[in-house]
Length: 101
Image 1 (cartoon, rainbow, N blue to C red):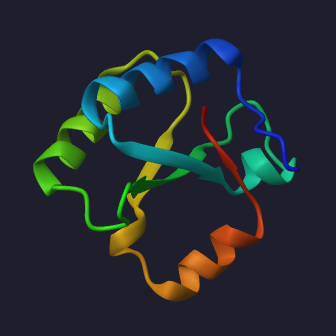
Image 2 (cartoon, one colour):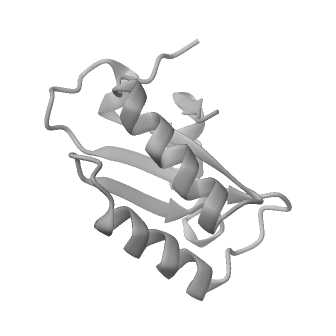
């Protein structure tokens, strides 16, 4: 099982934003902060998955992204909608990810 390299207080802020803006969406972290290759300033890559894997309504997604941008999480958080990514990207993410909970 992979581990997420992220300060607990930043993870808690992120979970709060998800609950407030995208309550029926699961977030998976992938990339350097899961692979153990991150440094302190590395960005956090997230993929957002709706319950039925359909596209997240664009206005809800934009509100969440704006809230992320306005938050005091001290690293760049890149969040993408699973349903809007190509299958080849899904395959890469599925190799190594951590579910945020």
